[in-house]
Length: 136
Image (tube, rainbow, N blue to C red; front, side):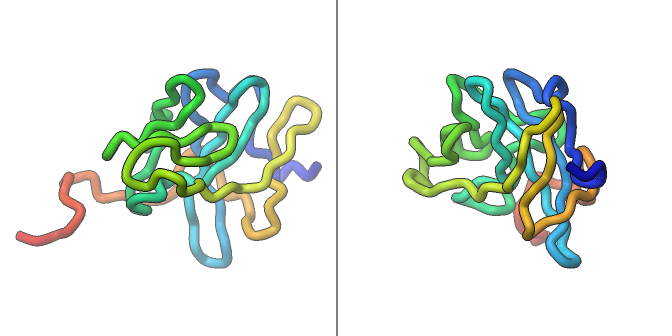
């Protein structure tokens, strides 16, 4: 595998939360997360299917409970291994997968739609307000 596709060492993927990284599709940068479940590592785009502006991992790991990702906004539950929403307003929806491969103890981006940008987020967010809309 090529080094510029290397996301992280398998040993860096937390057992009880997620690993955040940034990918690019054309000019658009997006966040994705790695999650380990029963020895398997999966990658998902870092947003809830109910409201796509709601991120699972805001930079310090997403909540993973009993093998499910938890949306902190409205409590939706997504199976970490399949991405299927099992509870919440988007029940039955499926997270958008990002193709990865594990080789020689490292996780690599293999999705032809994306290029690896960096570990963590490179996207700037306005954290000065909790409001979704900027009305005064």
